[in-house]
Length: 238
Image (cartoon, rainbow, N blue to C red; front, side, top):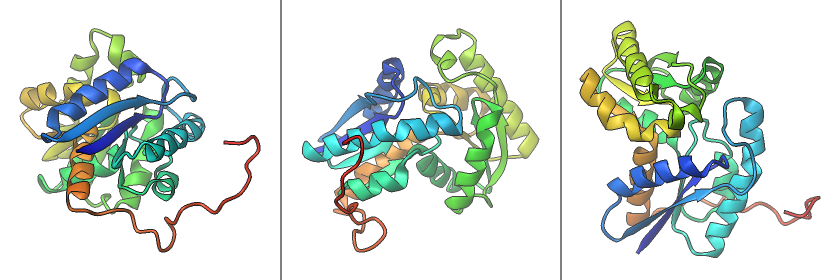
């Protein structure tokens, strides 16, 4: 059996439940998907500081997964926090949801739009698109100005995100939309039906990518940059 952990780098368990349900919905028979909530860090990730503070909890979860024989991991935050460090720690593949969603969307047309939560996170999305070679496909970045935790509690959240996606497509002339937050994962199908274009949720895209890599027997290369971290003492001990 293939075991995949979908790690929520924030400490909000309700969001973990959402991403776990979405990831399990696409997993193949014989693949066990478990949602993992970081044990320490911010309740939501909405700025560079939040992202930095989320990384130790994420890496602790990866180390625990390695001890338990987990085959691969999804980092369920659109900033893809700690991705490089996680690949050093893990033997199996580690995929970030922004990475997976952008690559998936690039196969669906000439260009896509990213719709995220707060406008202050747009710069991070732009940086990631450049890093992943996706900037030439991304036609625009848009914020719906809903705080991450409000995606779970605001009764108007789905409508607001849907309207933002519709406006993004019309403004950018895009063929697809990438949802820029793990907390939007359960809105994906509804939004696509409402606006009439493919909408990509990174949680499901990353889950399927990890599953495919494991099925092919592929792991992160360990000869160079992503070799295991050198042994040393950290203060405090981690």
